[in-house]
Image (tube, rainbow, N blue to C red; front, side, top):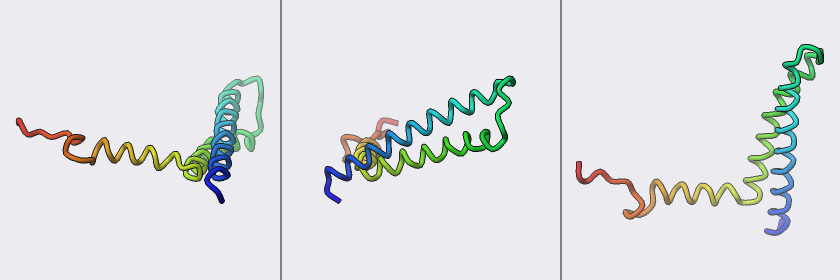
Length: 91
């Protein structure tokens, strides 16, 4: 898969994951209204959909390469060269 196609597929999976998560959270909130009387399968599906959406989001981030950038910055900020480290030399 070329870099452009991987980026496009990753972004599409991230968008799909976001839509599923938002829809599932909305459905879980609507479940709390007593007048709707949603079936138990739909209630469980809403909670499960939050996790599926988060998983799709993470897979999309991994495919598109966004996860590596965040890891790199985290690594540099916490474990980079001596200028980036928080040292307690004066204590």
